[in-house]
Image (cartoon, rainbow over all chains, first blue to last red):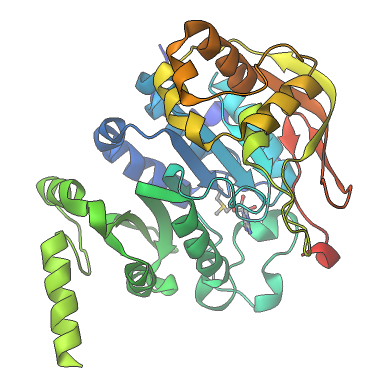
Length: 252
Length: 123
Ligand SMILES: C[S@@+](CC[C@H](N)C(=O)[O-])C[C@H]1O[C@@H](n2cnc3c(N)ncnc32)[C@H](O)[C@@H]1O
């Protein structure tokens, strides 16, 4: 019997690789809660940016295993040890993802533009001094610069480029990252958003935000409401968000 | 690394104009059985640069696997689908390198993972 998500004892470790932690679990729980929509969505290509130990991409591959080889996976990390750990974790669970050691999706983003149906990211989000961003090894797993937004703000336009018309993005963010501003940045690129999971641990208040392109949001918007929303800033329904937009512009 | 990935990778060094397709130096190639999904193959076919796939298969030791040219009508043939599937998804480069067509810069592939990370002066 294969399980639906990666098993911790089978997750590969290395001193320089981020071990699955509350944020990783939050992301996998959010994906698991959204699993039936994901299966219905029938993604062809899925991609994780910053795969670390491989816990998340392995879990996603296991969750989507009913789709068989209709769906294929890509994972990137800037840390070579992480890329190798991900390979071992995938193998231990007998699933496959292509792995590329890359800065975000550099090298892939040009040819993969508009082709990826699901992007998942648990970025380095901890507010730190700017110099720590882009350091080697384990530091890269958490160092997020000012407001923890340095890497997030680089990932958002890349995700936008990669995503297909029906594409979905799932991203972890802290309160300190200003999630409502992240949603605004994506709104300007034409995305609706919803917080699909919110969880406070001793150290941090975690959010998992789901983004989808407004133009194809109808089905998604309705389903979001049906599944009951945890707090959303705007655009639960496409028509509501366009109202919001209109009010906004009439005010100015 | 599958040839699917090779087909999606380009050299991202500063100053490189096209950077595609990357050359392949294959030292170790393995083949892993994968269930064939005609749906996936038909969906992805329009996005594949056929010439790069043919060159990739040749570099992996399979010069006769694929026809030199292909168009969507061929997706109706089971034989074509099987060949396309094998080239795209079943062959993996485990060890070797990718080579930038413009600068000759080598991107190593170890344990099946291409390393596309750039040095500071290349970004
Ligand atoms: C918070 S960890 C998450 C790891 C894993 N996805 C998880 O949820 O357990 C962030 C990961 O992103 C990687 N990372 C940081 N900056 C990156 C960049 N510019 N491009 C690709 N990966 C990056 C780190 O090496 C690290 O593995």
